[in-house]
Image (cartoon, rainbow, N blue to C red):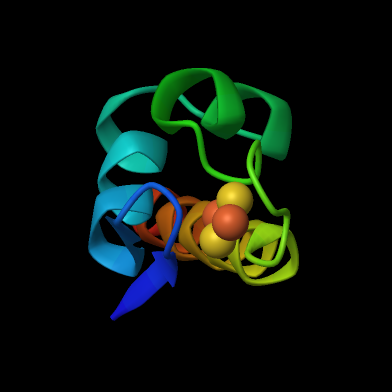
Length: 64
Ligand code: FES
């Protein structure tokens, strides 16, 4: 699913840069992929995906 139409960025791509690229907030995501730096319509959804990915990751890390 496309989150950012202006830059053609999908939810999967955002999850990937959060997991593997060390992106932890909107500012870093903007810097890395351009997300949110054009029309801004995607910011809320992009932020939600960052948050969700970080939560998923920390749950995973807590196991064991
Ligand atoms: S949809 Fe992301 S900046 Fe326009």
